[in-house]
Amino acid sequence: MKSYFLAPLLALSLFLIHPATAQPVSTHVYFSPHGGCTEAVVDALNSAKETILVQAYSFTSAPIAQALVNAKHQGIEVQVILDKSQRRERYSSADFVIHEGIPTWIDEKPAIAHNKVIVIDGHIVVTGSFNFTKAAEEKNAENLLVIDDSELAVKYTKNWKSRQVDSVPYAGR
Image (cartoon, rainbow, N blue to C red; front, side):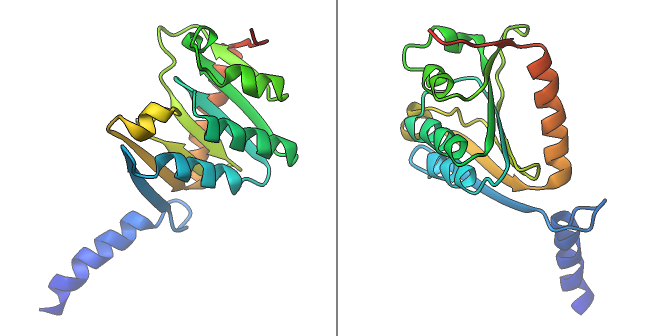
């Protein structure tokens, strides 16, 4: 009888342990509207020690932009890739971060660079449907995952670098 209870626990523990490294994978999920997505992104950014790589489709969130600038001022390497729509977006944070010395690129090649990804220190991945905007936090139904998994972060970093090669530097308006 006890084996019936142990089988689900074993399956769950295998899911939570990364198979290649036997390291635990930490995952937190958030939902909007008003589900703490922006706060979770800012908290993740505030935990950075070395690097932050951002890919964003829409980027108008003042708290997220300020957290990136704060990280930059603390000596953390911060780099941003944005969709080409951010060149003309009325409230884009692109100009704010570029004027604060954060290298920013525009991903022009695809029809839409619809990524919403942040890689922190080579092991934390922030991703989901959540756009980095006030509307995403307050009005939209979106989701956000904060995943601490080095192997997954390597894959997202590789994709970030491939998109950066195909992007053009943004100089601001």
